[in-house]
Image 1 (cartoon, helix red, strand yellow):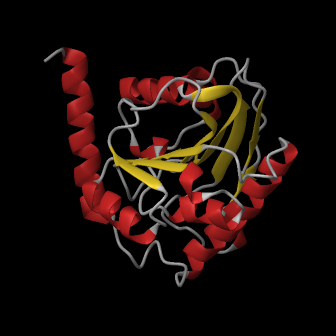
Image 2: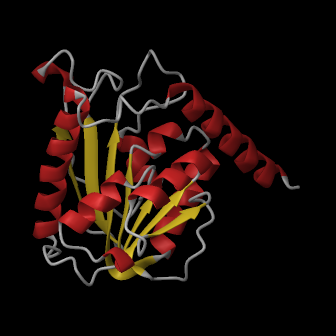
Length: 230
């Protein structure tokens, strides 16, 4: 096994262990006011961005989410008009793959795997998205491979939608905020405009895990006309 392959395998193992320690159904429940606040603000932001880029009609758009978890966001896209057969999710954690398969309509395709090695042809998707995935990846090579794969499977006029936080959480050493400088390095051809959402000053209880704000940006694949909102 090459050093690169060993590094990816080690990072996969670390991520699995980290999620095993922290995953809680109550934390990610809409009955948790902090999580509900985050989800509602994320939904508003996503819908505004999709409309801005002419994607208000989603029924015929093919969409991939990397790190899809239990498929919660994929099910939101169904609510927003996407046909289940056009939705795809990739998830590393086996238990969450099983949960997503159980909870999503049967036509939604949920695959187990690492987003650094996607099993899809080039230029398949109109939209590729990630939500709080990159902050859980600490290995730089894996991040770069994930970005390369996201861009590879995206159509030339497609969009990348990113939702993540930019500050470290001192209570959780298994995550690391992704700042603007790193985003620019990962997507060097993007014209990025940042906007913060889900910030702690609004309520001391809102999304306390992040100790900071989320950042979302969308990027076009052809030269990447990018925008960031969050």
